[in-house]
Amino acid sequence: MKLFIEYILDEIDLIGTANGYRVSLSATKNDDNYMRGTLQYFDQYFDIHYVIIFSFPEENPNLNYHFWILDKQGNQRLVKENDQKESLMGKIKENALQEIHINLTQGEGIRLLLDTIRNVVKE
Image (cartoon, rainbow, N blue to C red):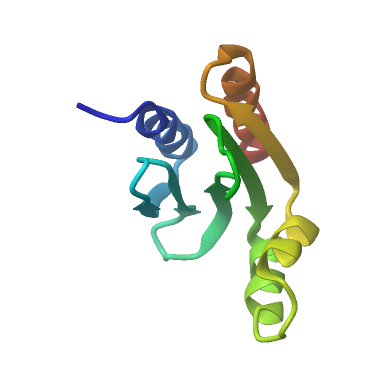
């Protein structure tokens, strides 16, 4: 059986494939079955076009997740700036096209997340 968040990740995968991208996922799961990770949309030449980073609040997650959508340029800036000693999370927020917060109990927020990803990838 899958975790609910895994169904959402499957939908994000389908959005990428429907737009001609290959999709990779790198994720970890903690003891409470909360996941954090990165999805990458890339082409047949392995050029990364979009990166979707997701995580949960460390303190009292209560089924909340945060998603950040980065385009190719935002991802390249993030990788370049990651050598600096500043906060990685701050750099992610700074370079993201969109930041979306969802709660797994609220379908409206999940639909907004998926619609936002669809719209960003179509542009």
